[in-house]
Image (cartoon, rainbow, N blue to C red):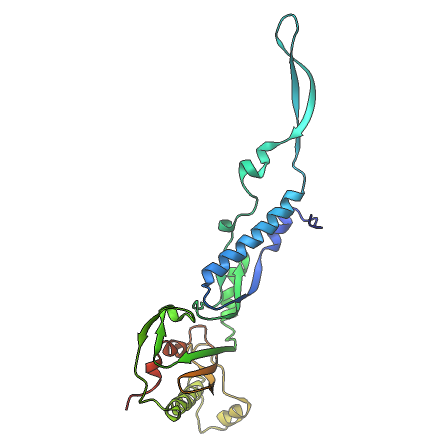
Length: 255
């Protein structure tokens, strides 16, 4: 039996705020939320059931031996079944909770996800406005596409990649890195030739919060030309570069 002394009101007050959960690959966010809320409700209901149900007094009725009329001869205490979970349902139910993710992630993604729970959902917009530094580790494979980009998904498309070289792919990533770094100064309203831009560049590229496509850096890890990985650093929940990786053929120019 749990060693807790919370009442239902205290439990309800605790279930508000920001929650961090690890999402494995090939599991949708909706499934992760449903499993989390079910587990929370199951544990909260166990704590709620540890508190004794209220008792009520019921009359003891017996039949008179001579007249046959019913008489109250006393009272006895019994559980008030009008408040029993089998009658009114569980105290905590998943459908009564509000839970929203900070950033939408596809089923093929994995990592730590931030959620708002009940009143915490109102804080998500303020968290997004801080332009958080995000890191994505992306595994890619040339010439092969799967359903919903799932790691173990059914292969639904194949393309030729004989024209692609590792040098071409590295060159493309370098160009993307330079383009986004230049764009970061432009969206910060800085002259690239000014002293202010020079001083800022010494500390790193600016982080504009109003530009949803700002790429900070890309690192490529080549195991082979067919199987390779990216480490992408950016400041956007909906970064366009992640969409490019879905179609591997778009990453290189056919020559």
